[in-house]
Every structure is written in C-alpha cells, then in structure tokens.
Image 1: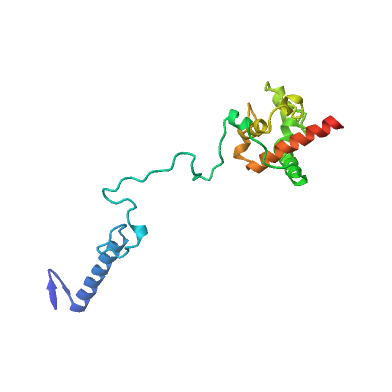
Image 2: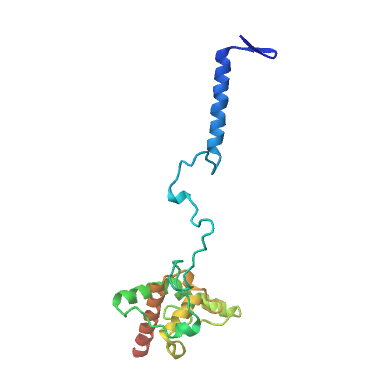
Amino acid sequence: MISFGKTRTTPRRFAATLLAAVALSLLVAACARGTYAVDVFPEMHYNQSTKIQEPPRLSPPDGAVPVTGREVTYTAAEASGLVNPLLRTDDVLAQGRESYRVNCSMCHGVTAQGDGAVGLALEANGYVRPPNLTAPTTQGRTDGDIYFLITSGIFVMPEFGLMLPPDDRWALVQYLRALAEQQAGG
C-alpha cells in the first residue's frame, strides 16, 4: 500500500482518482471558449477576415446598394414627384378599400368626409378635424404627396410607413382618387 500522509490509499483507488482529475481538467480545458492548444478548425470562417497589415475594406457609397432591406425614405419634396407604380385595377381598388376601412375610416369616416367617430372625438378635444380626403384640397395634391402623408403621418395621424407595406399605401392613393371621382360623379 502507498501511504500519503495519514490516509492510506490503494493503487487502484489512486489510479482512479488520478484518472478522474485528468478527465476533469481536460473537460474544463475543452469548455474554455476560443482556446485550442492545436488549431483543429482551420476553416476560413474561423479565421480573421482582415489580416495583419491589410488595409480596411472600402464600403460602398451610401445608397449605392440597398444592404439594409429597408424601404427608401423620401423628403416631402422628393416624394412630390413620385408616380404611383400601381395601375387602377379592381384588385388594387379592393386592396385600397380594405386598407382604408381598417386603418383610416375611424378618423376620416366611411366616405372619407372627415367625419369618423374618432376624428369627431379628436375635434371635440381641441384637435384639428381630419380632412375630407375627397375635397379638392386633398385631390389637388400629387400621388407622391398623398403617399408621403400616409407614410410620414401629420399632426395626430400616425406614420403608416411603419405599419403598411408600400403597395398598400399606393393602393390607398388609388382608392382615394377613385372614391373622389365616384362622389363627384354621383
């Protein structure tokens, strides 16, 4: 028997303890992040993308390539010249009618006269009454102007650019044009 201090251990017990200690130290070393005694992962995606003394990569000019996936934002002046990319078809008008019903009618009213329940409540509490969207004041604006107002919001009207995709906003413009023509004609 081997004697270590006051306790006596058998060689078999000593070997088992030593083996357990080695296994535990290997496990701890393996769990340490980013530390390898030997580089066992030489693949490219584990290496630095910029090497020592290599100049930094040049980024493309802003706006050259859409890398964010976000929609292009316009100023009011830029948006004024935009042309509606959607043709006035039955499907586009149905899409615009549904978007209007869900998002606009509570303030602007079912017929877009500015007499929706929420709009009247806003007016009663000191806010500006929502405009009549079929009036010449609104209809005299360009498609881009109306699209910009829907996208950016105005006064207490929210920014629908954050809530509706561009096609829904353009469909709204087509629907408002058709609704004004329908009310003027009959």
